[in-house]
Image (cartoon, rainbow, N blue to C red; front, top):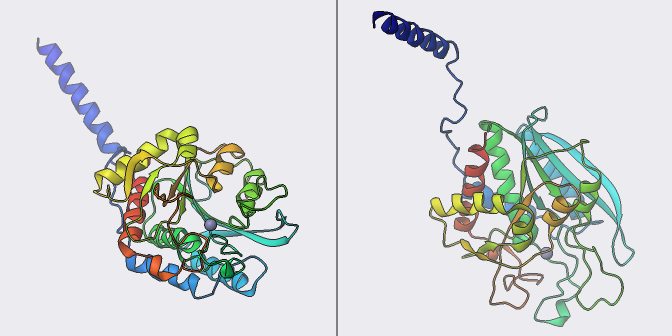
Amino acid sequence: MIRKISLFIIIVMVFSCRQDAKPVANKEAPVSVPSFSADSAYRFVEEQVNFGPRVPNTDAHKACADYLVNTLESYGAVVIEQKVKLRAFNGDILDANNIIASYKPEAKQRILLFAHWDTRPWSDHDPDPANYNKPVLGANDGASGVGVLLEIARNIGISSPRLGVDIIFFDAEDYGAPENYTGNAEDSWCLGSQYWAKNPHVSPYAARFGILLDMVGAPDATFYRDQISEHFAANVVSKVWDKALNLGFEKYFVNKPGGAITDDHLYVNQIAGIPSIDIIHYNPDNQHGFGDYWHTVNDDMRNIDKQTLFAVGTTVMQVVYNEY
Ligand SMILES: [Zn+2]
């Protein structure tokens, strides 16, 4: 009996010593997640909109690219500009620029966050046909996703999550063929992400999962479980929606199936093989499935609401910082 007790004491002592030797071994310890500032994200959206429409081959597009690169670098990211000429469905040659910001580029375990930063050259869903050939200002369709990700970059620059993070702003997402186009319109959207998925900035590129933010700023926006996301990355959809519902954001994150939306995440899934989801404003009451502002001249700052930005940004940050 005594022997047994002695042995037990020795085992306890050895075990205690081992624990003392490795005080920070518990990778599952709760992390402190920095606070997402909706004011800051709103400002990032506004600063993009102030350049005017960011249509490829325009001065506003070039100026905004410089702004995005400088801002990301100021928050400590390693930034790569992937500049490439891409041919649009109508033969236009676009000077495109995928802007890639990496944190902990050496880390093997990574998370990919992305949004498109270009805006559409045509307001072809405007109720007034006289506006069809005017560019979209893209406060929500473009700037909102980028604004949320810039605010996340600002936070990562201050306090790093455990995993490496890549933030990609894809170009030439919104240069797709209008619905009444009679020529070949196959794969005419998401040209920047299609190019990157075939030519990643590092090869081979791997990430545990990807999250796309598109039209994430409208007042009372609703985000449904996109069916392309469910097909390729159902566990990531659940991870994000569960987190949002736990945080009390059920007003925004509706736990129901939405549309099957062709967006940058389709090609990141199909070509790059990274299980990726889309958080995108979906309105089942509209025939096209999106908000009333979508592809109209009204996609301006009136469609940006700090509470929506906060719900999305907080949810994504909670997901990113709790990954280990
Ligand atoms: Zn669009």
